Length: 492
Ligand code: ADP
Image (tube, rainbow, N blue to C red; front, side, top):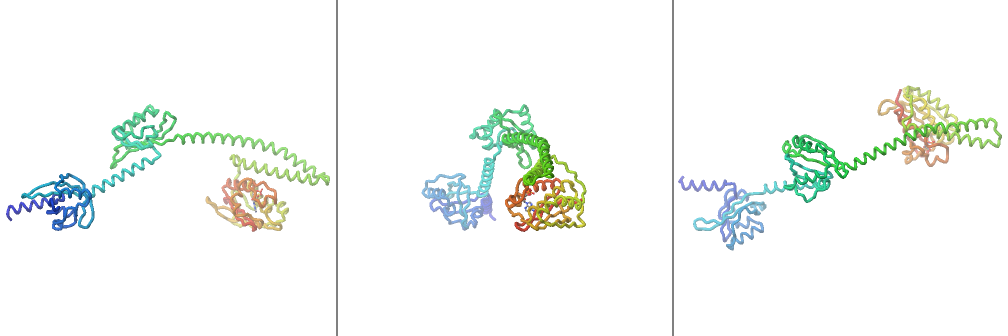
């Protein structure tokens, strides 16, 4: 191998491996006369395929065409690091950065093009731009004011909400006048005495999460959370997130005031009711007592009037008792004596009391108690009250000659074993749409209002009492086909 040949080889190798695409282009014909290995790799072919092509088949951008036209016309200047569009042999276009120099060798002039693929760089730039725009859009749409300081305490970023919160001109640039933001903030803050020390502490230990509350001169209250800005696990700055909590603080104060008013009103109501209880019942009992006396010695013409007084008095008494019971429950002032009770015993007491109502409505009753469901945990007085109410409803809202079936069976509640006392009638029933308001105080259904007397409070009381005894009440009914009320109580 001769020395000259070896030198040419080395030069060609160097050209192939120089990391840049190199093309030599003839000035008038614009034909590629030489292409190195990198140019072939960039354009997806061999150097031999590129030689003979017009450079404008490779450089396809509009600017590139104008440039090479000028070259052909002899009026072009050289280009340094200009961007161009290269179309490879598969027809794909990619951005490159290339320089064009006019050279001469062996008396022949040519243009030397050196190019570098910048597709990856452009993709990275696009990605960075997209990330930055996403971040900016997110920041701008936030309801919180954001301020980012670097570890020297210089402002690095903030959003529009932050400028609004502190009355800072929105046109203020982040840098280099960013520190103006801080000084403007200072003038708006009624800074706590230790603000500077607190800021210094945040910057000294930026990885730590800290929370502050600030009061502005204009009466606003701000919550502020200081969080580290992390880069590969290390704090490179601190992000302050300001939230205007003035309204929240105001609502809280209003809520506390409203609660106090409600509590005072509730206390007044309970006091009023407990004193009224006595005031209402004393004269009523006198009316009922004396009516009873008059009934012993009645004149036939007074009979109707006496019955009316007696019925109105009874009704008023049950209304007063139920209203007072409900009021006591709502004021949390009802006392229960929960104990183990024999269902059979309480049921027969309730039946004895409800018997006149059953007879009056001409209904018959049968009952069945499963041997495994004999005891419940309940208050005897209140359980009797519930059963009397359910039994008298089953009689009141029945049809003449109707039936009532009482079934006591084992059941379960979410918190343990229970006993179910189901009272089923075959009376007028309840429409599905009416079921949700059955247990609301004073709700009497349309089809029953005219028919029987009642207060509309019995079921409301029944449910609240059952719940106070850790039980519940369920109802199943079909309009025209009777109802079943099921009382569930914890098993004894
Ligand atoms: P009251 O019976 O004093 O009106 P309740 O609270 O006991 O009040 O009952 C509320 C309403 O529910 C009654 O007015 C009635 O319309 C309806 N209701 C209760 N029990 C039955 C039942 N067994 N069958 C049909 N409707 C009933």
